[in-house]
Amino acid sequence: MSEHLHDHAGGRDFEHDDEQDAVFILTDEDGREHEMIMVYTFDAEDSAYAVLLDRNDPEADGVIFRIEEENGEMFLVGIEDDEEWDRVVKVYEEIAGRESEG
View 1 (spheres, rainbow, N blue to C red):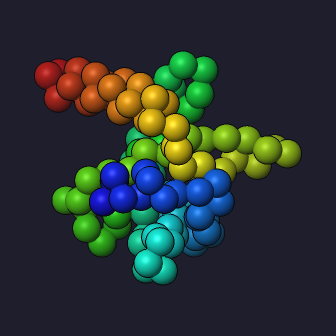
View 2 (view 1 turned 180 degrees about the vertical axis):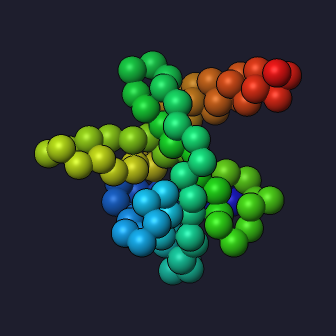
Protein backbone atom coordinates (compact mmCIF):
# COMPACT_ATOMS: atom_id res chain seq x y z
CA MET A 1 0.00 0.00 0.00
CA SER A 2 2.80 2.45 0.74
CA GLU A 3 4.15 2.39 -2.79
CA HIS A 4 0.67 2.84 -4.24
CA LEU A 5 -0.07 5.82 -2.03
CA HIS A 6 3.42 7.24 -2.54
CA ASP A 7 2.89 7.37 -6.27
CA HIS A 8 -0.54 8.96 -6.13
CA ALA A 9 -0.80 11.06 -2.98
CA GLY A 10 -1.25 14.75 -3.59
CA GLY A 11 -0.96 17.86 -1.48
CA ARG A 12 -4.33 17.81 0.23
CA ASP A 13 -5.70 14.30 0.04
CA PHE A 14 -6.54 14.23 3.72
CA GLU A 15 -9.52 15.16 5.82
CA HIS A 16 -8.79 15.51 9.51
CA ASP A 17 -11.15 13.69 11.87
CA ASP A 18 -11.76 16.23 14.65
CA GLU A 19 -13.12 13.56 17.01
CA GLN A 20 -9.69 11.94 17.26
CA ASP A 21 -6.71 14.19 16.73
CA ALA A 22 -4.36 11.60 15.21
CA VAL A 23 -6.82 10.11 12.66
CA PHE A 24 -6.83 11.23 9.03
CA ILE A 25 -9.10 10.08 6.21
CA LEU A 26 -7.11 9.30 3.06
CA THR A 27 -8.87 8.77 -0.25
CA ASP A 28 -6.86 6.61 -2.63
CA GLU A 29 -6.95 6.82 -6.43
CA ASP A 30 -9.81 4.30 -6.54
CA GLY A 31 -11.98 6.48 -4.31
CA ARG A 32 -11.68 4.18 -1.28
CA GLU A 33 -11.30 5.89 2.06
CA HIS A 34 -8.74 4.71 4.61
CA GLU A 35 -8.67 5.79 8.24
CA MET A 36 -5.01 6.51 8.90
CA ILE A 37 -3.42 6.99 12.30
CA MET A 38 -0.30 9.11 12.72
CA VAL A 39 2.04 6.90 14.70
CA TYR A 40 5.41 8.59 14.38
CA THR A 41 7.03 11.84 13.26
CA PHE A 42 10.70 12.50 12.44
CA ASP A 43 12.96 15.06 10.81
CA ALA A 44 15.13 14.53 7.75
CA GLU A 45 17.09 17.20 5.90
CA ASP A 46 15.26 20.27 7.23
CA SER A 47 11.78 18.79 6.76
CA ALA A 48 9.41 16.98 9.09
CA TYR A 49 7.69 13.72 8.13
CA ALA A 50 4.83 11.65 9.52
CA VAL A 51 4.32 7.89 9.42
CA LEU A 52 0.70 6.78 9.17
CA LEU A 53 -0.82 3.32 9.53
CA ASP A 54 -4.19 2.12 8.31
CA ARG A 55 -6.41 2.05 11.40
CA ASN A 56 -8.34 -0.97 10.10
CA ASP A 57 -5.29 -2.88 8.85
CA PRO A 58 -2.41 -2.25 11.27
CA GLU A 59 -0.35 -5.04 9.69
CA ALA A 60 -0.26 -3.20 6.35
CA ASP A 61 2.79 -1.15 5.40
CA GLY A 62 2.85 2.37 6.77
CA VAL A 63 2.93 5.43 4.56
CA ILE A 64 5.16 8.47 4.95
CA PHE A 65 4.13 12.05 4.24
CA ARG A 66 5.94 15.37 4.53
CA ILE A 67 4.49 17.77 7.12
CA GLU A 68 4.19 21.32 5.82
CA GLU A 69 2.86 24.50 7.34
CA GLU A 70 0.90 27.21 5.58
CA ASN A 71 -0.74 30.20 7.26
CA GLY A 72 -0.21 28.64 10.67
CA GLU A 73 -1.91 25.36 9.72
CA MET A 74 -0.11 22.06 9.33
CA PHE A 75 -1.01 19.60 6.60
CA LEU A 76 0.36 16.41 5.07
CA VAL A 77 1.82 16.29 1.58
CA GLY A 78 2.57 13.21 -0.51
CA ILE A 79 6.20 12.74 -1.49
CA GLU A 80 6.30 12.86 -5.28
CA ASP A 81 10.06 13.15 -5.82
CA ASP A 82 11.76 9.73 -5.99
CA GLU A 83 15.07 11.06 -4.64
CA GLU A 84 13.35 12.64 -1.63
CA TRP A 85 11.34 9.43 -1.10
CA ASP A 86 14.51 7.30 -1.12
CA ARG A 87 16.27 9.65 1.35
CA VAL A 88 13.30 9.75 3.74
CA VAL A 89 12.77 5.98 3.68
CA LYS A 90 16.47 5.44 4.39
CA VAL A 91 16.35 7.79 7.40
CA TYR A 92 13.17 6.14 8.69
CA GLU A 93 14.63 2.64 8.30
CA GLU A 94 17.74 3.73 10.24
CA ILE A 95 15.55 5.14 13.05
CA ALA A 96 13.36 2.01 13.12
CA GLY A 97 16.45 -0.21 13.16
CA ARG A 98 17.95 1.65 16.14
CA GLU A 99 14.67 1.49 18.04
CA SER A 100 14.22 -2.24 17.43
CA GLU A 101 17.77 -2.88 18.74
CA GLY A 102 17.16 -0.96 21.98
